[in-house]
Length: 127
Image (cartoon, rainbow, N blue to C red):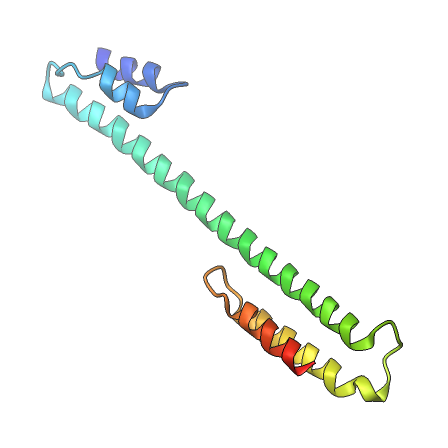
């Protein structure tokens, strides 16, 4: 049981690899080896859970960022079309194109999708 307390003590505040390196002594019995393996399996599972949580939070943050960027581009396009004027009947087709483009970009944007950049260039040519 001495190795388990040593491993737990070493893993607090230090890198797990360092704890493994410091605890290279051979366990005196198979039950102690199983206990040591269980500690490391738990450490690995906890690390996997933390990483998965971090990846999913980053993914959600990236989606929020892409939606915000699309909305900002829509505002910029609308400003380009209106040029400081109030919306009039003559702006209808161009404003509808801006709205449609926002819907397309919102549907297709994902962290791995860069289609919104291409769509942005296409809309600017239309305007």
